[in-house]
Each structure stands twice: as structure tokens, then as C-alpha cells.
Image (cartoon, rainbow, N blue to C red):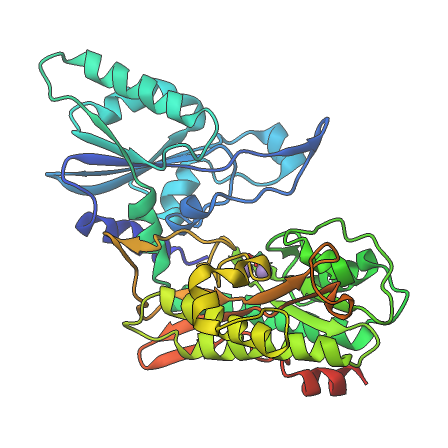
Length: 431
Ligand code: GLY
Ligand code: MN
Ligand code: MN
């Protein structure tokens, strides 16, 4: 296993961390579903990004001072019996030899050693408020470190969320390859599911097709709970019940992406259960598709992340006026935010190790501008629930289309375009 890439990511922090500081990265703990039945372990994303190390209850301290940068990891100790039950542990020796940390210790030593590690530093940085119980631990270690020498400078506790997020925001080639693979697997799963769907299928059965198609291609877990929403259910944005039977006159919205080697894909497609869009469904669908294509075109180096947002709002407002759902001047309606009753979420989010990945959306007082190596979703939608005051023929139509877009030097690359979004291509795939 070549872990050089993770070591290089730690080394790069020398340029970014303040002098005389310590960055703490807590790993995830094992989570239990019920009683003593554990979920499969999933490492915390930033911890993984800087280590590649996948054992629970570990902690990294990266120290930047006059002697340069050094990294310490605390890991579960070697334990013959536990390893028989739960599998191999690297132990401190393995963490140094295979993961290239400067020093490694048993995690049982964290509380006793951390005050000494922090003593003399001026800043301790970590992602505040993210891990339960960790804030209090940092306060305790910092207090203990300060009390060791009352004549030393005080140690400031600083939130590292932006610092870490903005490093992770620009994906390196290794990450881009893995995200492309997650996208390819997820796209293939959407294609297979689209071909299979038929009237009377239960949403849960469709969900199982996705999980199966992900898993057989190497993406064992979905990157988030899939949304499999027939008809009106699509208007519940985070619908995850996935337990209703599909009717032939409904659209089916599926928002599903796999995780591949820790990296997420995030794809939504909306298609007719019977394989053919009705006139009303097609009209709404085509507005969302227009918004989608126009928004993707604006994902370019130097453009503000607000550009695809505004473009999608305007195209959707114009479209809703065209089909008579909104009434008035499109520019005025856009200014008033009339589209928000039908398109109530944002156009997208960063994608990476987490489906809603870290990374700031603001740069000072302005929205951030696209840079090469960023990956954003683009996911406009129109949702017309039964409770809305519109002609009955539109009710129960919910459409979202979502692709994953890599910002490149000279434009962008749609990593999920393999799944058809053109309505005619969808119909011919389903026929
Ligand atoms: N799948 C969650 C989202 O699209 O944000
Ligand atoms: Mn998304
Ligand atoms: Mn999604």
C-alpha cells in the first residue's frame, strides 16, 4: 500500500499552518446500530484525507514549529484477541512504518500525552463542534498544557474548518480519478435501473437495484441514503421512506450515488414509470433540463458560484411563466423570488469525500469563484405538490436532474453525463 500521497498532503500543511501551532484531526469512532451490532466502520473524511488510515478512535496531531512540520498519530494498540474478532490492527509500529507518521502511540495515551504536545504552542486548531465530546477534550488538554508553565504564552483555540475545507476543496489527480470512478459506477446503476423500472414496482425494490448495481461494481455503500420517490413523493426533498408502489402515470425521481474508495458521486434522474412522459411531465422536465444545461455552461474558472444559481432561477421562472404556472413579468417574478415555491433549494454543493463536501462558499464578502479542481453538483428542480394552488394537471410532478461537474482549466467536465438526461434518450433507453 503506497501511502505517500497522504504524507505529501500532511507535508503541504507546512505552508498553511500558522507557526507554532498544532492541528488536531480526530478520527471517527465505531458506531453501533443497536445493542452490540456495529455499523461497518467509516473513517472521518478529513482524518482519512491526511492519513489514509482506517482504524477507529485514532487521532492525529500535526505540529508546525521552528523545527518544521512533524506528525503524530494515536492508534488502537495491537491486541491479539481483538484482532482475532475484528481484524488486523497496524498498531503504533505499523502506523510509522506503513503510514509514514513521525511518531505513533497507543490511543490510550492521548489524554496523558496531549498536554505535553500542546505545551509551548500558540495555537491549537481543529474543526470546532464536529465531533461529540471533542471540544471539551481540547479545552481540557489546552488548560492542562497552559498550567504546566504559567509564564508561557496562552494557547488560542482556533476553528480549522475553513482551513481544512479549502485544502480539500481543490481535488488532486488521485481524488479526481476516484470520484470519476464513483460517478461511472453510479451512472451505470442509473442506466440499469431506468431500464428495469415498471409499474407496480415498490420504491424499495428500485432502491435495492441501485445498491446491487453499485456494489457489484465495487461501490459497496451508497454515499447517502438514496431518494427513490414516485410521483408526489418527489416533492419531499429528502424523501427516504422509499416504500410506496409506483403508478404507471407517475414520474420517478431517484437521487442515488455510490461511495467508491471513500469518494462520493451524487446523481439524480427523473423518468416516467411507464417509459413515456405525459405532455405536462415533459413540459416541466424540459424547463428543468434547460436550467440544467444553462447552469452547467456557466461553471467556468473565474465565474462566481452564484452564476449557475441565478441562471437556473431565471430559466425556471421564465419556464413557469411560459406554461402558465406563474403569471407576470419573468424579471419581476425573479426579483420577487416567485420561483421559490417550486424551486426551493440551491443549485448545488461541493462534492468529494463527503457528498456535501467541505469547502467555503464565500471568500470574504463575496461568493467564491470557480477554480480548476473543484467539483460541484448542478441540480435544479421543480416540485409541484398536490397542496399547491395550480391547475390539477400539474399536481404531483416533481423533477430534479443532478450531475457532478469538475471545473477544468478551460471549462468543465460533466462526470455523470453518461446517464441520459435528454427526455427522448430516456424514453428510448426505457423502451
Ligand atoms: N443527494 C443529496 C443532494 O443531492 O444534495
Ligand atoms: Mn446533491
Ligand atoms: Mn443528490
